Image 1 (cartoon, rainbow, N blue to C red):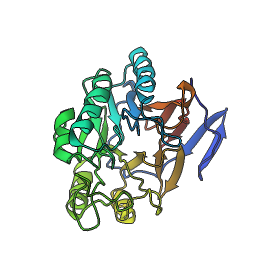
Image 2 (cartoon, rainbow, N blue to C red; image 1 turned 60 degrees about the vertical axis):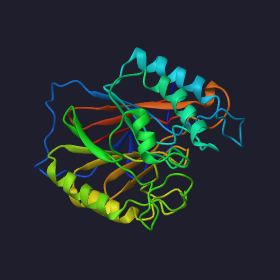
Image 3 (cartoon, rainbow, N blue to C red; image 1 turned 120 degrees about the vertical axis):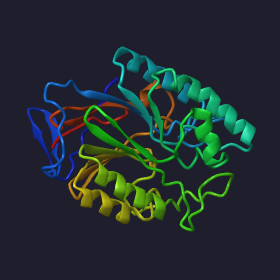
Image 4 (cartoon, rainbow, N blue to C red; image 1 turned 45 degrees about the vertical axis):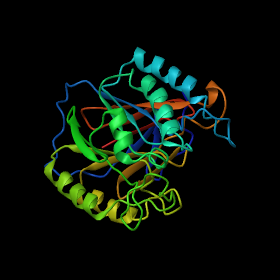
Amino acid sequence: MKNVDQRLGRRAVIQNGTLLLTTATFAPSILIANETQSSLKVGLITDLHYADKPPAGTRYYRETIGKLDEAVSQFEQNPPSFMVELGDLIDAADSVETEQRYLRTIDQKFSAICNDRHYVLGNHCVDTLKKEEFLGAVGQQNSYYSFDRGGFHFVVLDSCFRSDGKPYGRNNSVWTDANVPAAELEWLKADLKSTNHRVIVFAHQRLDVSSNHGVRNAVAVRRIFEGSQKVSAVFQGHSHQNDLKDIGGIHYCTMVAMVEGSGPDNNGYSTINLEANGTISVEGFRKQANYRWDS
């Protein structure tokens, strides 16, 4: 079920048949986990767009139930330390009641993987629902926050805000107008300053492009990342395809969408392995590419 990446990033080299990418040199003050510590495994899925409706184009909404079942089986064999869903867990619906039903159905399966779960808000998650409705249903308190695990610092971002500062929700969103608002930028600066660990960021909309799939003020966000000298990688979804960019010594990994294509061969999910020495690898399944880089 695994898929091997065929693309090389700007700073990638092949060494003994393994894709290696080098990250920027970190500030001396950053703590590295104990070398004897086992790796931290993070389960990752994105863009399921679950909905009880017929396919539209390349999106097979109902089939994400079966695709998620396969991912659950894989994660049961090799349990992750925690799970992250990178946004668009559900697709937009015509009514709040229908949207809530979609969310209950898919989250019942996702929540069975493990208790430690993190949900990144996607534009479809909060197209019909308000943010507090989605978060309340999945048992998550905030739309952006941070936490520590295994010697790493993790940041969950929320880019579901219009350029006028209005949060997405109840059919007022514009998917091409995604922004990280000023208050969240200030929080991010303070949060990165407060940690001495290597940082991994989770986002939905892309922070490495200026296209419609990108965050409109992505340059400002990247400037904060680079200024901290602590961010190793950003994992994101939204554009539904594998991609990898190195900007300012930070790797931006765009993960493949689970909703794209019919049948199990068109599934996509992954495990991120974070080693104590700073090595990060993405073990992709089905359509998800594999990556590995050392800091």
